[in-house]
Image (cartoon, rainbow, N blue to C red; front, side, top):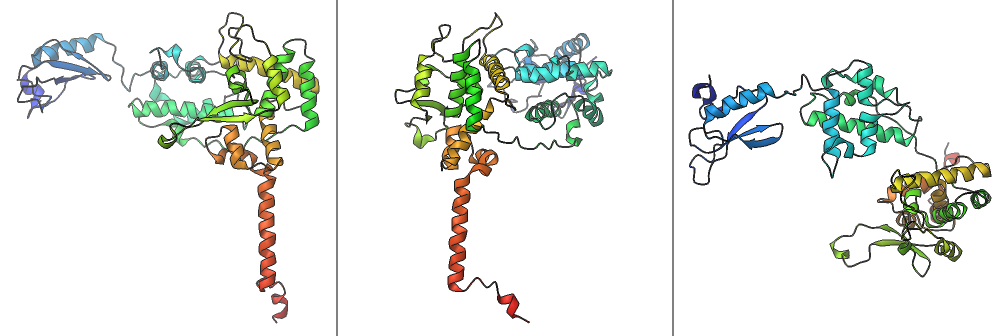
Length: 408
């Protein structure tokens, strides 16, 4: 039996329930409205459980406590001690889904390594079942490291770093919402990945790949136009495949990237435009796409499996790899055309600040990380500045190379 003595101590609630809290929503005229736990004013009582609130349907504290006790006995209680890994993953995926509050609506990149997995790569849920891990708190740092060692990502790959960050974000979320006391990922060694080298194509190599694409039996012209667009506009494969026809202007420029503008630039056109050769622009204009006339390359659904832009870009990347194979060139990445655009721009005495804008980088540091070794213009400027400085030191007598020989 619940009494006021067991529930109130100086007007503060001493809850006997495991996971549910009771509080009072005082009416505006109630003189006790500053104390949400005052039970004797006759104002409505509400329940709170797992970040959800609903009315108790009564203003009698004893009755509300009895109903809450019955509810807890009937409802499955999920606490730190019994929260399963599968339940925690499901809750996290629901949180990650934006439009529909359903785990299947979460991004594929989150669902894959946490829940779905594949033939070669078991997900966290699959790995936990295979190793008889049921509760979330049973997983230690050593266990997480053992699972990470089963990952099938190529060593030094960027995908390894990205998926590592996604799993760490999941465990951090569990700690933030009191599902775990400590993050097991905090004790793991940090991944040290080498920067992906810049691999531009030589003019002769680019000509061979383009010729191989033009000689293909299927989708020859779209593949060749896509290669030319990435080479001369510096677009990535995804950006090029999703390019609309309206992005090509009458003066042969590509409206490529949208810049972030401040309040003073509110009336300015925030697009970055890239000039391309007239011959490339004419081939793009002549390219037909009856399925999606608004796009150059995107063709919508594929064999009834949907028509996401990422899926279409992946299929176009397969065509480009086939062209690489016929040309006998490796590595076969689509990003090599973007690298070629950047390196040729710098070799033609372009500024790295301008290149950063043309590539759509948010920071020039990103551009410098990948393309600074190719910035011969800046290195020549540094060499010229040092030559002038050394000449000045010789004139003023500040360059004393023979002084040490004269001192005995």
